[in-house]
Image 1: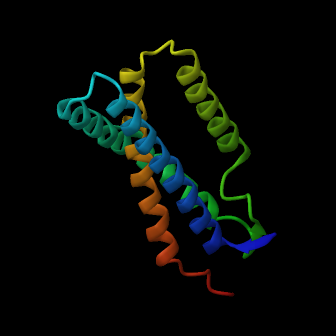
Image 2 (image 1 turned 180 degrees about the vertical axis):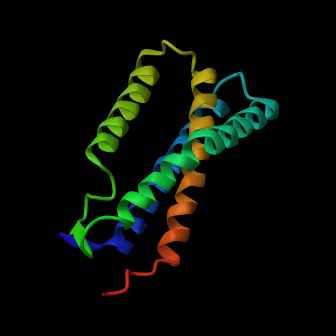
Length: 142
């Protein structure tokens, strides 16, 4: 399926929203089910997520936005909102998360906080994609 660059930005926003929301939800459910629940842990996780966003994810999301808007031509395949490297990284992160959850190498209360900490910057990054999608201006034809 061929889509516009603007639609690629919206797709990226949806994917980052889904990933961040899913991590926040799973982290919250795991934390609530464990005996280690406390508001202080949630606040620390949220602050950690904000730091991750500021130091890493704001730059990553900006890089993706620039890559999408600089693609040659106006229309592209629907999966081109990520580069191959990004798809591989996403696959690795998902696999690691599943592996850690299934093997319980990391205790569930600690894993839940990691999920929350990683969900925050993903969700915040999605807002950058929504913003760029909403204010997208196609290049002026020369």
